[in-house]
Image 1 (cartoon, one colour):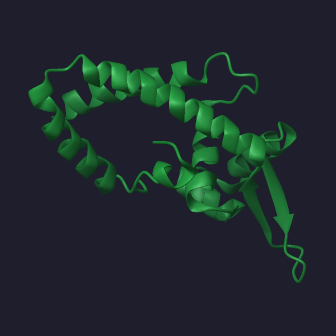
Image 2 (cartoon, one colour):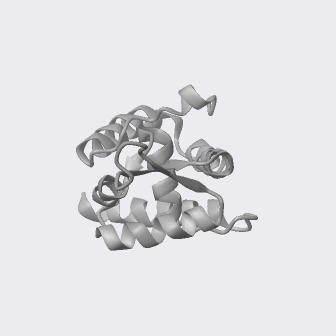
Length: 147
């Protein structure tokens, strides 16, 4: 089972990498993941974002610096306590996430379309359970009109 998941993971990483290729605003997979988390979970403190990404706060700070420089994210300081900084995705960042998601969905639809029709239901069940066990947030693309 682990070998099958590792093989599927390699395939999905390939899909993810191809979906980012040729974008006007170049981002790494890690930066894209941060943008997705900000889109799906809303504004986050850098420490919370670091926890969600599984990186150190200093790594998350550098990543946020790069996203802000590219115009894909914005920092917001609380008026009462200027030490409290949250990060939110910008309009440009949200548009990038929408574009990349559309590319990924199209390629995944093509791949799934080439599978035997009888395997679709078991694939959905297995991948949904896997994502849940991994702590992924359920797909909220419907809320953004991504269907």
